[in-house]
Image 1 (cartoon, each protein chain N blue to C red):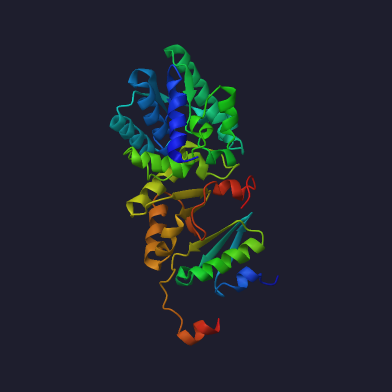
Image 2 (cartoon, rainbow over the protein chains, first blue to last red):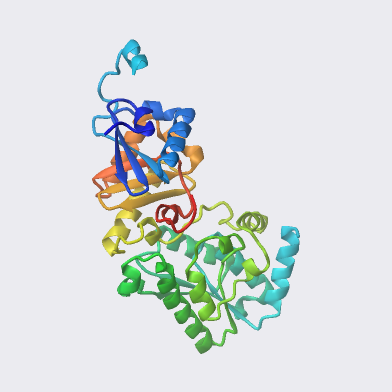
Length: 76
Length: 274
């Protein structure tokens, strides 16, 4: 199944779990979500896909791994 | 009409009552109503009644008692048993109807036995536009909502409470703990206690303002006031938040990216619009 617009807007490693109208993003990196504009875009995409709620779940090893080099981050 | 004029109308209505019994939670609205009732009628003709149960947060109970002491408000505490009613415990979309039906029935009975003429609640004008099945129970038991009747909104009640020096004026709204469980998830003492522990742990981290821990079985979804959201998305704080909620016995923790919404689970269930 092809990725939705919401999934495409997330990091490649992120996963979206669907529970009715609630979408849970499982992510290993919280840092991108501190950007209000990014959050607003994700919320708009989630709404367009029929979700009323969007939540971020942080994995146990979230942000524990070394960040990707800047050039790789930019490429994603 | 200004808030001051509305308060004048409220005082006039209260003065026309022989006596009132106030359904009292210690929240912003009922604390204000109790204070104005006391001014209008005096301590001999006002009684505030708290209904305690597993769905009533302990912190709220402590606050309610403190508010009553502060205002020298005559206070009675009773136990309610809504969780014993399967129609409530199954958690349908009209769950509040069954809780309020028991509560208002008990308060109406106490009013009759003790000679209080009118039972009043703290429903405000904003509440009339919300999904409130408990209103039907109030109507059935003849409960009057003088704040709503006077057209007083939540913001106006906060401002008038501040002017009276009531400690509740800036207090976040604190509905019952069952409001943290999606409709259809059975209401149990264990789930309510889990929510209460999680919210208490988050408060201990320094989170202020509106806060809800929504219980989605294995996952707790935390709603923070939008103004707090960005700060708590910082990785180190998010880990602290996650660990605090996990300490309450929830396996998975998620932070809502939109933040606190009153009636969030009504929206999720499609009962009200997003």
